Length: 345
Image (cartoon, rainbow, N blue to C red):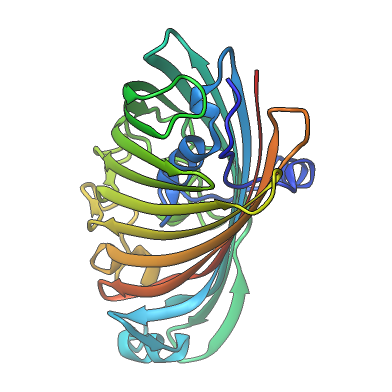
């Protein structure tokens, strides 16, 4: 089944894979998390492949800005507000998160299809620390990289007005995220690495998604909604539930080039550390569950190239936050590059 709309994020596939396999760091849920992958799968046409669909998605997230609510603050200001004499306190100054996701789709019949997502993860974090004597120094965490949590979903096409090149389509999906990624990585001093930097969450989570497409060719509109219902992980940490909404418009500028613009919204609830293993609120900004949960809105322009005489395509997208509101002090997204290649048989 050939589709016009295709993909959301991976051009540096070989480079990304080589780098990701050699190191150590990751995002368990992150701001974008699974909603990016599912929105990409829906818009790419991979979920509507006739026999099998495959997408490879690479995302690179850059974070430096620290917010208190909606106000930008400096790392030193956060340290000044939280440091106590005789105690160490650390704040991230720069974080980069990379994810390479392999997405496969297998149709079961005209209505049902199965989707599998396997991510490889890599994160880096630079930090500023003030020790008990009041001396401030910069440091870099060791990388953490490897396999993240694998996701499996079932998609059901509730309505479509045509099997090929429909003008209207409504699809629902549900699934589970399995705890395949490690969530007990420790630093050199024996402490558990920050929960947000672990490769997985250690939890079995439920996922719900909906996609609606309406075409007025050469313009196509889509709406993706996503809900991630989290549970407590085996180490006692529970990430907050996440809701995502994407409003997408795509214009076929030529036979092979599509231009797109998206409005992306993410809202996450606060995390809970039931056993207190990851929480060090008096020592680290990122180990304080009071500093979790956010609302983020982004604009994302994109360009997509459909490879002539094939069902393949490549897309480049840049996600730029226009509004972010966080609980407490949090380092937030400054920009995210998304590159995708996909093909359907």
